[in-house]
Length: 467
Image 1 (cartoon, helix red, strand yellow):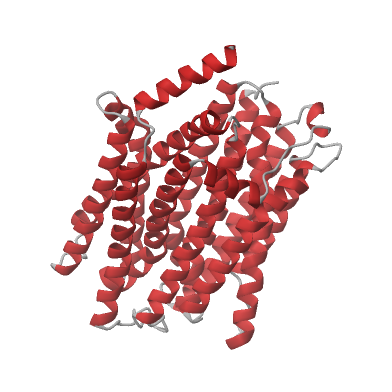
Image 2 (cartoon, helix red, strand yellow; image 1 turned 90 degrees about the horizontal axis):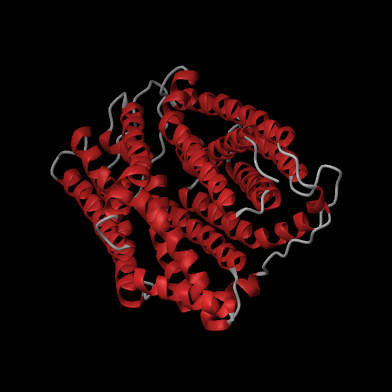
């Protein structure tokens, strides 16, 4: 069975919807609860970390539950639809905190709702990606549909990161805390409604083959994931670099809104934030679709990987230099420096997937076992843990530098101290630079899977299989 054009389009729409929801939560929940509602940033960071850790542990369990599901609609689609509806309601609750709730009551509300958001999102996310191997057995088509899903997910993410903050202010009717509170409530309702509609389209457009109703799907346990990682030193190296690269990205994405509001400043700071994210989103797509193929014709993958890590470090360094030379509000300079980061990050996203796939062959040669699902499950698991640690560091960092949440009622922006602004600049740039330097060092010293090595591994594996 193959995906029809209609089903492919429905699958792509589903990816756009689910990543709109994910981006709204991951990029703006700290700002909403810390800056608008006034919760202690260290507490917000702790809850975000706790929820991500719980979510990572919950993934294998959810995989087992989905695998054992038996309904007339199949095993995946019921979870996609039910998880979507539940997550949409929780998303709205997340950005519609009761106005009169304060202190410990608000803290408890946030902790419960955010953990529920992670659980309900996992309910639909795991079966969403599991649909691909369930519907088609053709490797080429699986890869093509995966590309559609990843690309459309990038579109959904970009729609939120680029337009959400400006939409919040326009819908809310201004830039005061009360305006933004009302704006987030409406924007989250719109995103939740879009989410339900597109996933319902997917539910009715795609039919699971009859045999998926009776097949058992093996889900890797946490013990199996770690054992596979410890047995495969190259998978370990790739996962470590993925964690470090993603941690840099999560730190930046969570602190960027504070940088534009309190450092770049101005009444129209949200438009500057939107412009920067627009440049970033477009450049990442451009790097994956056009720049990487050009570089690949002239360089090896490992050389491109090292180059991109260096370019990211240069980009962060240029942003830091611009900030301390009075150019923080020069959008031409800031966007130009950001180009280094975003162009490199787009290519790194592609290459980490390529390298992780190569470690599967490496592991088969070394141990005799081929463990694609286990290795890729491990990647998801540790990336969630890393993102939890990154957001915790952001929350703790905001508390340590003494950032004061916005309490204006007239549209003005509360002035931060010079020390706070300096701390914010360092948190947003120096921490990612340190992580990227470590990633570059580890990769250069320990990564062995060169282009030539990958070819020789494939040759040896084919010879074994033929034998």
